[in-house]
Image 1 (cartoon, rainbow, N blue to C red):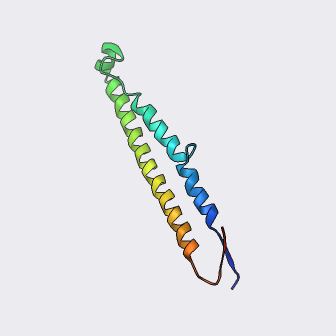
Image 2: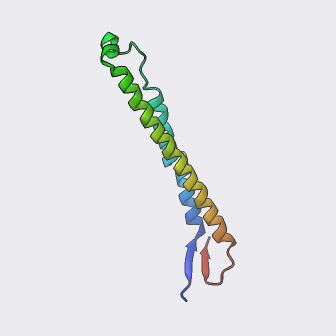
Image 3: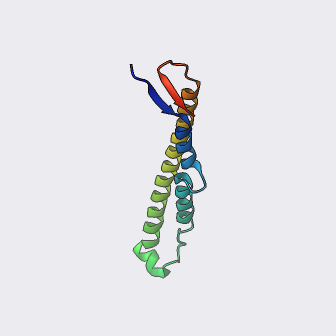
Length: 102
């Protein structure tokens, strides 16, 4: 059987890239914050906004996007945690056929 190479440091770097200051998780958190600030008050579009339901429709769309971002953030945090778990498991592996790069 041929040796398999596992780049433990690379797996950990992928997890760190998701969590980092310029990573995908913070990007989504920033977008969520911006959307939370984009909610409109009842008179934001004058009486027209109330009569036409535009404010309610806008806020409903904002809420839907916020929920999607929350789900994405949770999934990416889960992925980062699992990548770290996989890296730690490979690092502890004593299988003779695994060649680890650290």
